[in-house]
Length: 236
Image 1 (cartoon, rainbow, N blue to C red):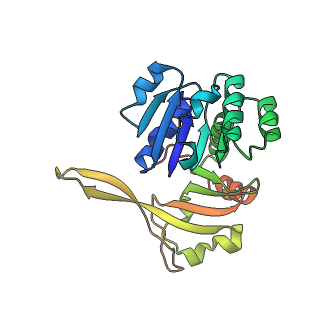
Image 2 (cartoon, rainbow, N blue to C red; image 1 turned 90 degrees about the horizontal axis):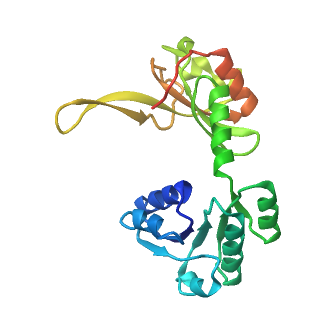
């Protein structure tokens, strides 16, 4: 996949790094040459260019681009102009970052269907993690359902999946169990790794330190977390 990323602040640069590491062709773009210099060796291409300049944009391989991400996080005007220019030039998929409610309203009026809220989403994930004290990480599927990683309640240790019966008692589905294992590295030093048990069988016995990955409604996940709080912090 070929991706254009406009705006190389913390969010844009991080996105460019990660997509490059995943094997995608990333063209990272910013009007600030210092930001471009910092990232040039970590992405496929890095270009100093002002996205608000329609003429300059025509020099980019827009027809071959699968998606353009406008990650500009400091200037609403520049973000909107860049987005409008990309739409004008026919980029087939444009994803834009919203900086305010008004900004989002304008983006929607421009026909942008994929709008990013990185700060809001990060805050919501942290709020949920703090609210569910036994949670390690959560992944929202919609407003009502999530997939959440939870520390195993002590009362489950030594019992089978069938005995605990989360489906019956909490109306939750177990996606998998993640277990801590000790593995020696190339130097012979023990290293802790976490391994998924894959599809969980009814006869699987829960072990101390297991991490439950469960799916269900947010209130029922919270009920399990609150009922079986173990007071642990951190994750893997």
